[in-house]
Length: 149
Image 1 (cartoon, rainbow, N blue to C red):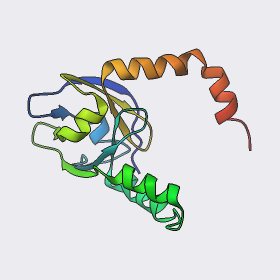
Image 2: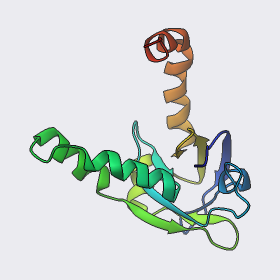
Image 3: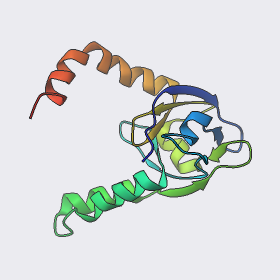
Image 4: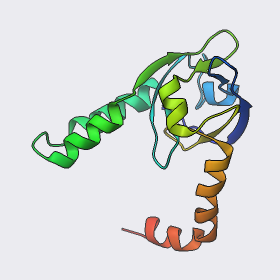
């Protein structure tokens, strides 16, 4: 299972293509780089990019959402609305569809931020705003999120 770590900024061309850094495509101890990913809506206004293995785990989680619950159905519809399998081209790029670029407010630049099981693709301005909140309360967040069970 790949682990995506690090943050990189890349240009988005006129066709909506962005390079996926080699270290993300070779995440983990892969001998062959990843050539396929799954793109979907991310949270807080980004786009999420999953390896096939990570997406399979996400699908398993989605299958466990009870079909009888209205919130679960609404979440699945919204989350799966723009799921797009993508392939890496010969230059190491993927194409982000217009609906996902619009959702994330992506223009000419994208920040790719590794979050272990996925890569988030952000507009630089949105990521700065999101990180500002996290940096200001990192210790409080850690206390809530990393506390011993």
